[in-house]
Length: 179
Image (cartoon, rainbow, N blue to C red; front, top):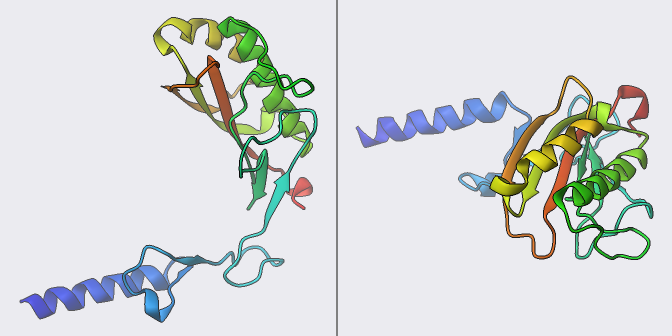
């Protein structure tokens, strides 16, 4: 019984591997580490993804080992943008409305660095320091920036230190802008 179960698992694992763009090295039989291939992109080498770092001085720079944004496989992934002034580095505003305006401006500048805008955004993740108290004020400002059809959005409560809001987005890069 155990041997037939094991063979079924092995066959299933091989079927999954053969029918996706995932290739496993022989030493990685049961490892979660996989090598992905991108067979639809003629510029990619087997086993790699094309990733490009996007930076702009018009939005706050990273405070650690991360990028403002990464363009990969037709999408732009931004880091979380807080209500920092990109020139002074200081926090902007004390209300959720003021801080949301600055965070959305920072997101907008990161998108613009790759010739995108909020019309290209398909997913937003929003972190609010006090979601119960601040959601209505945040939502009113957010609605002024995004366009219909509105992006999918997740809003969660998070400890943000001195900030009331942090926003990151995923945007689709149109075919003509993929570099």
